Image (cartoon, rainbow, N blue to C red; front, side, top):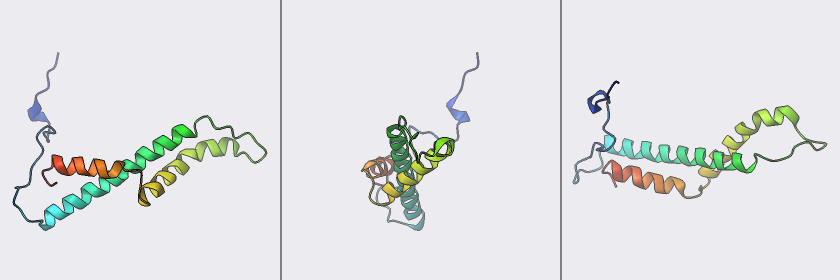
Length: 109
């Protein structure tokens, strides 16, 4: 049986790299904060997309104007677009909570 040691992993997720507490917002820190904000927004868009996908899962599209097999194939693309737009226009609050926790883990918030 093979055992894994923590030294083989490049990141220690339990102890993230912390910025010094009194450091001013440098270019590197500002870039990290911006990247965390983008990641949180992307996560929220993905979350909303999956939530909407579950809502539309059992929808019957066999009516006279139903899209048939093509509609079923591209429904996930539509749900992704809905998720991105909902997140872009204010979201449902998931991005703010995720961003706050990610900043806290990195010692930036």
